[in-house]
Length: 398
Image 1 (spheres, rainbow, N blue to C red):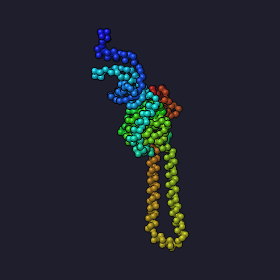
Image 2 (image 1 turned 90 degrees about the vertical axis):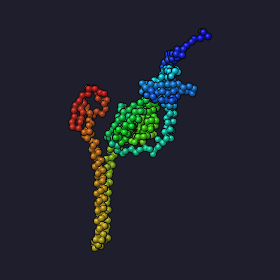
Image 3 (image 1 turned 30 degrees about the vertical axis):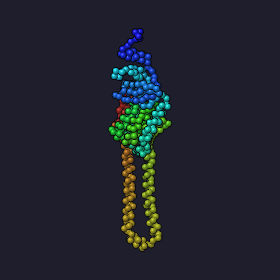
Image 4 (image 1 turned 180 degrees about the vertical axis):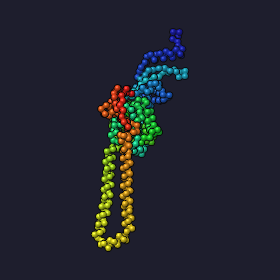
């Protein structure tokens, strides 16, 4: 018995700590995530298989670097190192996680279908909750990345269809921060900014990239929005849970801009058609009245006609007044609508837009510069304001 090694509890705990941390530096553990808790920005959770459970933690400093946010039921590969810790007077060990990857697309599809079923049963996807899009929104809020082709495609299509004021709420379109930022964007436009329509957009990507748009909290935020939402996530074949709860789903970000706004050329054609129809209706009314009078004059002799007119003079005067009143009011109503519409079109003229504080940037050859990427340091440019232009030199791009 005297040859058996003897250790204190502290010594054996220290030895265990050294063995674990020295022999398991950086490892990957495969399993299912469970019991996720977010405490002061740190994620505490478990990784389990059919036999055992391993405690895990991701410190706040690493959370923003994760590919995906840990969620209940996810089959993952968790990367990190084994460390020991004391809970009260009892020592234990855990995986200190610095990265998480999904264990195959099948795991993502499983989570997607389970969450979709749950939200559908709650009624979040029903058509009766869908809000009607405004015919001509005066201001559109866009929740997307401020860089990249998505926002430029939307801006370009809006300019071509019907120039309208846009307000961008910048977000990360993937990663652990993305879901919270999307929710913040929906809340901002619902409480602090007077927009008539919201577009939530991002370009294509793999299933892991689209995870924020399948987040349950994001779906519930969109469901609670008082402002209509168009979802424009990924490519035409990509579907997210946000698509099902949104008031309208667009196949692409460009398609979202086409859905949001009518084409100004079509509106102009419709107005011209209204004018033609109004003119035709008025001419037809007077033509029919004239023909009826002519027919009456043929069948009635002069004396009978005089007697008829005398007997029905009051009715004829009333009919004449009513016809005149109807024609005038109809013309006045249409003219007012058309005048108001052209006033709005006038407010969108280049000069009026410039007077509201905007400017046009041109190069020295008077060619418009649409993107900041087309400007180089030390380049000479012209800046056109509503009351004149100035020449400038680009010192530094941000």
